[in-house]
Length: 355
Image (tube, rainbow, N blue to C red; front, side, top):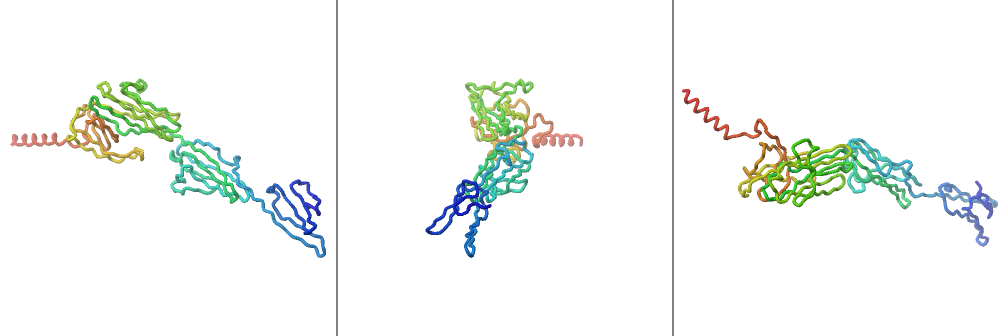
């Protein structure tokens, strides 16, 4: 395509112009507002004898852009355990490089293989996605021509509620105060509340409302919620089972705390119960050893503790721990030495009488 002859433009593109400097005997071709289609080889030819030519090469560089038509939506919702592929298509000259990272700086996991903070490529696949992979992902396109561009994609990983109660049996002297803790995880965000068991079906339980002595509170961070219920000036009528409930569109879960009365006891009459590890406890929850005063509980049924944690409070203070219970068990989980010793003595007496 001929662009200009002397100072006369042949092409009808108004962005081109040609000028001649008679004093220097030079011709200049000017291009304004360069476009990608203007890239290529340009030939300047002087029809002298011999003919003189000069070639110039024009490269038009274009800053990167992210093409929404070929990229993932800005907000994605997926069920936990499924696989997800995020796509981010970049365009520009030269072709941009696409890099992925999490907005919070945490590493990206692909299956069982851990990746660094960054991952390259227009596609990012998250296999068997888990709740900890919720959050914002950034795809960044760069090609050396400023500025670089990025797109933010928010991923919500949905799952039914989970509930974890640190201490499920708590003993407290009359007049004391106690706070129950309940940790929940859910996405979408769950409706949470405390209820008191009425002795019938769960739907008949009484939802606890704030009062002078009893109040509930909760704090949330992401898909995690920390619920607590505080009972002040403990009275006999407060004895019973309290439930923390979490519900969302995918299901519901609950945990329970049994509150019973204990008699005041001095701190020298204590028994230590060692804590055992549990995979159900949140990793962010500290593990503690529980102190249980001997012979102070007044449970309505016999209770055995095995492996985890129970709380009896004799000094009006409270700390959380884990526990599991088996009530009214026919076989003791721990040896009962006094009963066995009595049986041995009776057997020896009977044998002597027979002889």
